[in-house]
Image (cartoon, rainbow, N blue to C red; front, side):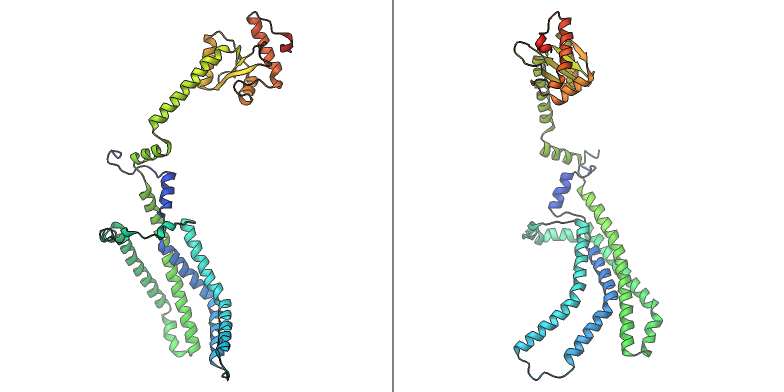
Length: 360
């Protein structure tokens, strides 16, 4: 019933996943990177902010105070600006570099390295009013709107709780001097921002989990889609089955021609079968005219019995010949003695004499 109505009951194939990734369809939460940056920036300010504020204060006093310059032309101004920028860079670049690294790690952790230059090309469907209306009033938009309202409520609740937690400290600020007021206010703000960031980070983790689940649901395939993909990648199953049937038929025809020429068939006893032919007048050494495993080995034994060819069980020899000797190739020298013994036995059964030099 599910197949009849085209329900997506099949897991996405690797090819489907790769195509979706190439088109930019990946599981990603925009809130996760923002929340991680907020938490990271707040922690960096809590650790690094006091020294940064002291540096900026000293720099401001240095530039606005002191003795006025009697001469201040363009070269002097450029040199002074370069000095200020260099000092600011030494202090601010580590801070902003840390935030940049955090943003890169957060995004790479979600989707990995993904380079899609085709996304830079203009897409006229993005400005289609009908498509825009469908996206605006879609279920995804409604879910994101509800989630956004819920985030606002959570942020408001956390901020209110932080203010209430510092209620006495805030009212006591009126009795303190300006420096203490600034320090206490910054501590309260950083504490509030950190708690809000942690709350948003927790929500973003749940949002990322939802995005992954939704991505998996969107990638699911119907049974017909799986079949069509298989046909596209591997070809029509009927054609593949026909090709395999033709290949099996060709192998069988070759066996029907080669096995009757053999003098003996060596087996393992049921898994392997190797047919050996030896003509002292035309061959310097016996050759393997047919070999096979499983069903093919059964066919070789059947053909050998039909043509009254001796079938002998020699496990080590059958394994060695099947593994190391190609079709229509002579046996290796280290197997001469074992094969000669078998041929001598077969020749005796048939009333033939194996030439002495070849037997040796």
